[in-house]
Image 1 (tube, rainbow, N blue to C red):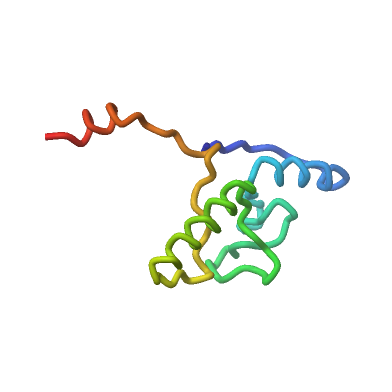
Image 2 (image 1 turned 60 degrees about the horizontal axis):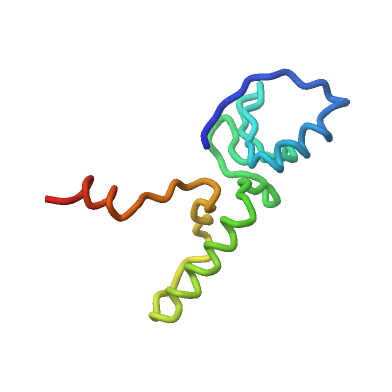
Length: 108
């Protein structure tokens, strides 16, 4: 789901809000122009330069598991997958379509 909220957070509440952001797979757009991970670590600076070494784009656990399974399947076919690729969307983030729906949409 892609939803954007704008809210003000007191510094004393940052730890609790960071815990929520971790569960929500949220990123923060800070007033200084940076984009940050749930713990407040810089992902992207205002000038577009790279992020801090420890900053991570949040993904749900099932997205990491799907990535691992997909990579294993590809390895069995001899396909090398760069480690830098992000996880695929988790099952909670996708909407599966029925074969009939696919046939109607993509059929002749």
